[in-house]
Amino acid sequence: MKRGVRRERDGTYRVQLHDAEREVLAALPAQLAEALDEDDPSLYRLFPPAFADDVAMNVEYHSLVGKGLEDGKRAALNELERTAHESRLTEDELESWLGAIESLRLTLGTQLDINDETYVTELDPADPNLPRHHLYHWLSWLQEEIVEALSAGLPRG
Image (cartoon, rainbow, N blue to C red; front, side, top):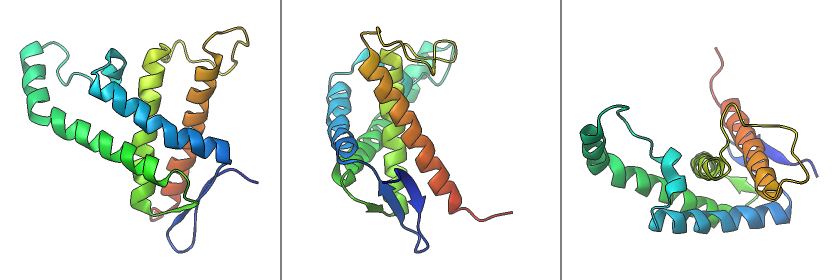
């Protein structure tokens, strides 16, 4: 089976993944929702400060938009969990996948301390976090597949 995400002529998106991959996609949203409930510090990249040098403005910004941002992330996670086993998705559903996967990647990347300088493509088999690094790379691949599929539906020129 050729894995990936492709736009179909009718405007839907075909998602071809192995069953085990779908199981992971169905399980991850609940884990991130739990972290959201606990205000886990690894969520920092999900809600970065809006003002680099003004704590008071950041508190005000968070009080104004924080709940809406969190609700949007939870909605995307719920949609991913609900549709993880579907082989065809609407554009709205796939856009929810994109948002949920980005939230999952950002959180996992924070936990693994991945940034531009520490990101590696060659993984160390002795690394105790190897499975989590594999998950990060797989989520990155899936995110790229989704972006390419959604881009295929944009008007040209």
